[in-house]
Length: 244
Ligand SMILES: Nc1nc2c(ncn2[C@@H]2O[C@H](COP(=O)(O)OP(=O)(O)OP(=O)(O)O)[C@@H](O)[C@H]2O)c(=O)[nH]1
Ligand SMILES: [Mg+2]
Image (cartoon, rainbow, N blue to C red; front, side, top):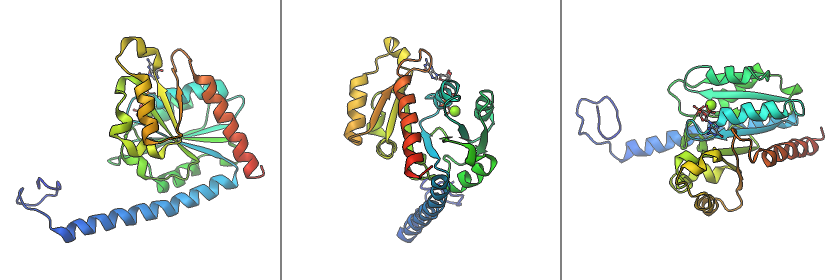
């Protein structure tokens, strides 16, 4: 296998020349431009319903599905939720959401490391958007690729758990720059760790001044009230903006 690019060439030490690199860049640009067009279509559909849409992004295991379970359990009498789940394999997360009684649909991306607007456009065909106030999209656990793909959401919400280290906003800046909200999760574990919360928040603000940061624990329930309040305000704001 080629050591440069992983292609199945016979000589592992061959090198691709400039035109090949240029072609790769063009294909990536085309892919993102096509995704942006489809995302704009999704956004028109969501706006037409006055639907507030969040795209939850994080590394694997930061607690996205647990946050959804907790949020739906606490707010489902107040707001009509629907959930799209993105994972490479399994329907584990959609099954966890279904157990809360909220409509959900699982998208499996196979080898893909992120959701794209095309997958989401078809995924929502399985949900009743007209009867929904808020659509939560849980992206594939990956701190890199989902940052580049607009799904038609109102906001991206990054989740960072305190076991991951406070330097993640500096190491993976694209994701934190693209997110309007940062949920720092699992703060119940802080007494057992050497995680510097203040440094983490300073790093996130260095990358994205103005990012809204909420510290939460799904286990203790600490910090969830401001998150719920923000969700309710945003749903009301979206409906008012769309005359719903
Ligand atoms: N201590 C603690 N553990 C938590 C908290 N929230 C989630 N967890 C645990 O973290 C683990 C991963 O949680 P998930 O909700 O599955 O994480 P995820 O981000 O959805 O994972 P992927 O979908 O695989 O990317 C589980 O064992 C949860 O119980 C929390 O607030 N505190
Ligand atoms: Mg999950």
